[in-house]
Length: 137
Length: 436
Image (cartoon, rainbow over all chains, first blue to last red):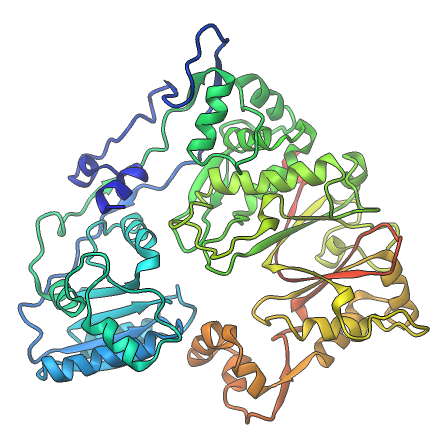
């Protein structure tokens, strides 16, 4: 499915992404269902929407991009899932062959796969200019 | 960090990656995709992946990666601000058949017919608690996602859908208040269990006798089902490809493992008393893990004169992953035999199991879960994994990191002396009385 459709499915319309905060109708009290068979003559029921309340999304501006990778240090970070190390090793080999002015540094992130690794983050911030992060499986 | 990054994800997780980035505020994150899976491939195969195309965009993967790090940002990429996300109107109106279809098509159900949460039925459910309909109950996420929040009325809707009676509602609220979803995003197809303790077991007529874990009593059946339905509706769990990735899924997710402890037939303290509650308190305790297996498969489980359930259980647990705990579900006959063996408290049995269920470091390191979850923790210096990874291969270590990873409950009808065992970790115990 395309990204646009996926985001619409989660109630995050392209309009919202353009910065208009109000989306469909928390204040709209009731809605007729659109799916299902014709319902002539049958009694109608009003039922509760059983869904909870998603948190608002705080948009995070993406970090500025580099003009070039030449002369830069790129960290290759694995989150620990099997195969990520082998994959990043091949990425490193690709850089050596195709962009030899790029320095790559491999690191396995410490902690659970969804945990932050503040020590590694600090190292990257000090010594690196870009990150390629391999995330399972 | 303020440093450009290119996340690399296998194609199987495309929807998850895009949606999770969006939920975390980066809907235009430049995610690059590889074929799936990466693990188990030869270096040649992996090289072909790296030198080949991104299977989503069709463009050369390494060009995608370099572009992700170097192509200037658009105005959209730089955008900040806050976006609200809607789950639709407060109510829906249509015929009963159409509403059943609508709930089914929108993922509000477990794909079995539901009781429609009409205003009348929800109002009746709300009479099962003294708490106000608009009171916030808690927050829930089905994995590493930003959690959703919900109120008493929304929990009531899921309880109605599952077929609960109003008198069951405090238990459903207690479960919802824990924030623990019974559907989890992991590819492992997790299972979940709950243990019910206290006088409420008899008041609501839970089954803890013959067929204790089976479909033989309304509270066992519907409260377990309610946990899964509310995990979908209140925690946004169970959306395949997005918030649920279990490769095979788990049949236990339909109504989870519901265990009302057979307190009167147990020779030991009830589970909730072990957790610091009083015997007269009503408590639900929640567990998470991989599933439940029968004790009959253990070595030493043939009928003989000197049945030793401690050895049987240890044998069974040696096949479990130590990442999750071990939950013994002992028929009262098993519990009585264990007491005869000298285990007059659960703690004594747990101590024996912890000390005698062991493995070599070599075996430990060969396990998938050790590499996946323990090794990164060892790198961080977390114990005992950091020490285990420094030991020689032939060193013997406990199979489970802590004695507290073992838990014991008693249930069953005493028609035979069989235990069952869950590779399940204890999560939390919640007072039911607080929600009456």
